[in-house]
Image (cartoon, rainbow, N blue to C red; front, side, top):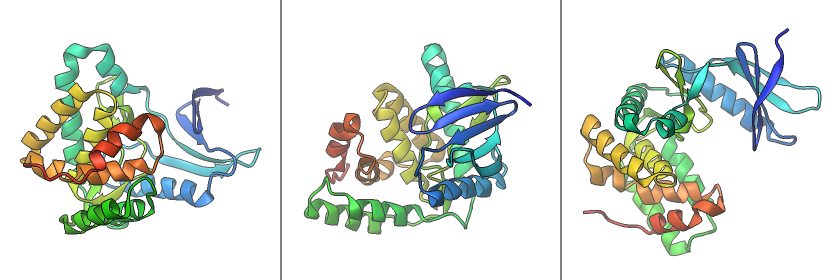
Length: 249
């Protein structure tokens, strides 16, 4: 039997065991959320993308839930981009191409992105009633699409294998919805870490997808409000600025 090696620790523990990766959830983590994460990943597996397959959902000796999936040998795209800044443009283009390939897929059994965002904004206590109403009104006016959306598409969730292939991981937030909403979230995640990358990403996404930049930008207050529900102190200042309902030229 292969040795089990811990490779990451934070909210949950991540282990490698041979050709498998095991994600062990904290004690008390809701069973429904574990099963939903595995189910979302399993549904996406059928669409032809490079997605590590779910192999098992189990309860380990101490009562914690665990998901076992294929292990992809490599490193995440963010690490590569930081180590090789001269390749950022090239790698960002590959990332956008991967996102557009994903958006070309349909997965009718996934939940609606706009319905999820509506619930998040409705429950957000960091904003006023007036702002909540304005955000929900804007959300309801946005076109409803059924494209496959990752919900957390960023360099840290893309594994680069030894042959340069890209594998998309962490499908816990997968949904069906508007590709520009998914792109706005990617832009926001990049802004929180590297504004230069965010600007490059926005330009590339809009150019390659033939999307008007202001259409993606109109989603920013909405995805910022949804991100606020995570209550991460280091993100609060930027997100609250974006939450102000702004009509871009």
